[in-house]
Amino acid sequence: MNGLVIRDGARIPPGLRRIGRLVRVVAHIGRGLWLALRVDAFRQPHRALVREQALRWQQDLLEILGVRLSVSGKPAAGTVLHVSNHVSWLDIPVIGSLVPVHFLSKAEVRQWPLVGWLALAAGTLFIRRGSGESGSKAQEIATHLQQRRTILVFPEGTTTDGAGVRRFFPALFRAAVAAGTPVQPLTLQYLDHRGHVDRSLAFVGDDRFHSHLWQLLLRDEIRVNIHFGALLMADDGDHRALALRAQREVAAAMAPAGIPHA
Image 1 (cartoon, rainbow, N blue to C red):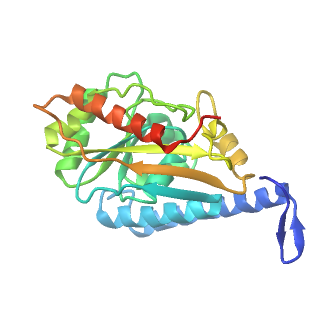
Image 2 (image 1 turned 120 degrees about the vertical axis):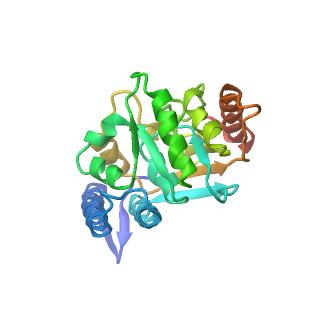
């Protein structure tokens, strides 16, 4: 619900509350940049210290945004390649608040004001969509995995409305095969107060980050279900079969929860 909030006997209008939360978000981004400078993250972003700082920073961001997580399954111990369906930019702090991980993101994020700098400091890898970089990027990811850095990719290649799963492009799964690293599928679902899939939280098409964030700031609560699936290994080095198995695992985790689509 987006009604008035009562605090200390006073009613706070939704618009004023949204502005207050925006100020907190901007201040939190500033704090993140200060932390990044303090730990020299821009020059050395792939250290365990940076991953730990990023995890705590993202936990605090979710608190500011009113995100409430429901988690099933467990993040795998050790180094893995996480793969997840993709609904919103919010997927990154949701997942990043639970596991110390580096992300593969679209190259455009690098140009976002302030947020792009934070992504760089957190050791994010970037890929240009439709550029044919998948092969070289898979090798780069494999190198990180061999150095015991957990990586997360969104193999749909784009965001969806969260009501289903698109085909997983198999090229990036070569990284797990080359590194001999297991894959752990993750399933994300954004829900409304009735427990239905909430398509309005999706960040798709020509949506702009600042406009999407402005809408989120009016919400009292954002509910997210996240499921960590079983570990998968490639059979005989078949990255295509591995991608298909991961896609099916994510789709199956959506279906049995008894969550109707709005």
